[in-house]
Image (cartoon, rainbow, N blue to C red; front, side, top):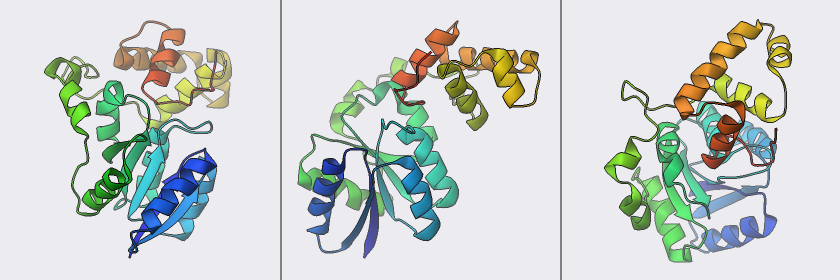
Length: 216
């Protein structure tokens, strides 16, 4: 019996997906409508596959996947979304994502994706593969050809910027100097290939690195 966790801030999506999966007979399905709820659940139970909405109000699916894998490194993470994941493909793969399923997928496609993940097989829809051209694959790489992935601290700093905190406030919060915060932000700008705080926040939202509700 495989244990599946569905995470989506829309209750009807959770319930409908749960009903589809439980019809298989060999899936035991739990659901959550917030990231905070998930963090409590993974302390109590181990999951084989986590089906995560990419954009949720309290935390992005990307950050939630990282937190799940820190606690349960053998879990398979599938992003379940209606958004275009291609711009954030490198970030998602580097974060340990096993696959992607569009919310318009049929019940059969959804079940197949989960069974593939359970066999430790990657799940990438054909329409995504067709968009992953060579130039696009390099879009989020730094000058050394390394994937430009933000660290947990950088994500936290960027979220604070999105919430309207100035460098002084951020420095006070982290008990460090403004100069240190400026260096961190400069590194973030380089990784995201932007030149300002506003551009960095907008790019991070596009890539699903921070929730959409954060605003400058």
